[in-house]
Image (cartoon, rainbow, N blue to C red):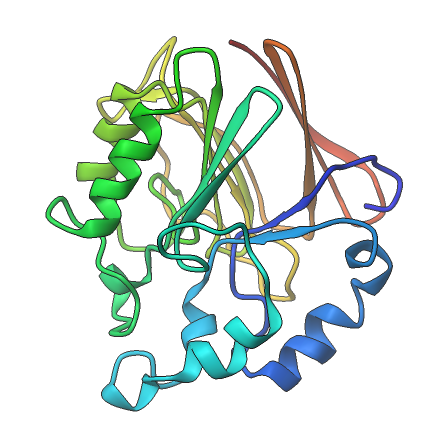
Length: 250
């Protein structure tokens, strides 16, 4: 990753296997120190960041003690759970999907929630001339084993506001879809890219679908570049072998 010029890094969550601050140090901050010291880090909070007791009342305070104390994110109404920032002609929106998957202390995300209302307004106010990119932990569309709790209400919202790219994680693989609209591959609609291959556990595809374009269960990272009305995505193995390429025009 050091070979590629970037303004910031994006992580799709599950920084460490336990969520504990000491494990973040060993598993993330120390190995990635050469990169992190040179550029900001943007994180979509993952399920592990809420700790081993995320689904019980015992998980209260875990995120504050082990995550919030070690990470600084762009200020917004609910930083670090959900927030956005504008850079050049792009709006990057980060949301927290974990409540739907059992994390009791995570902000709710359904059509009646404050987070959903914030997301809808943040997309609407971006303007027609900006790239809209959403970053989240759990996938909206995935060929992996993650239960789909998101596509029914997030996909129509993304489509209505012309989101071009959704960057997601959770599953241990790289996956890129075709543009999807109304649950089917289309000439237009958001492209969903799962970037979940920086750990040591990898997940093979669970089923076939007509909207999938690429699925690789191996270590990887992606580099995205936006120049005016063109977005270029290149995905590499950890030894810098190119494994996927995508160019999108606004």
